[in-house]
Image 1 (cartoon, rainbow, N blue to C red):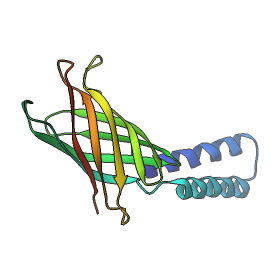
Image 2: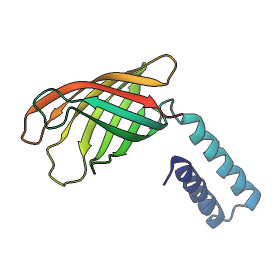
Image 3: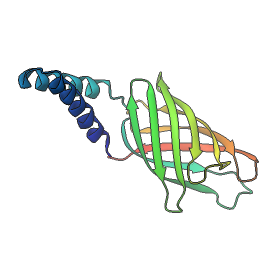
Image 4: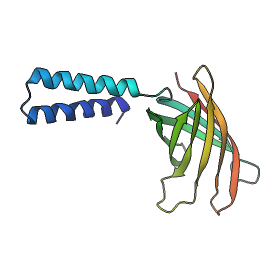
Length: 154
């Protein structure tokens, strides 16, 4: 479900509650419009489709990775979801403050996967690219780190 679909669902929920409470349809419609406007205003600057790339240090079986990343940014909270061509399914949770995204990433393919870590990116002034560093645990518990970049998909 896209973020805009979630906004519609939230608005619909308010409309259903208003209807169940016996509020006139015009009032319910007005409340739905206010909720949707509020949610759109609170949507953050990182919201949308990004392309993620990262560098893996020497010694790993692959030297780089990445894929399309769907970011939902509301207030200071960010969540992200990426499914790569190799089947890797990663999620991230982060906060956004002073043009910095600081958070954690984790693999959701396997319930007890050891692939997880943290990252910090700085958003460039034009809002089209964020770059920084990641650190995390590898398959066998080894600790790795490298560069990470998110580029906004136009």
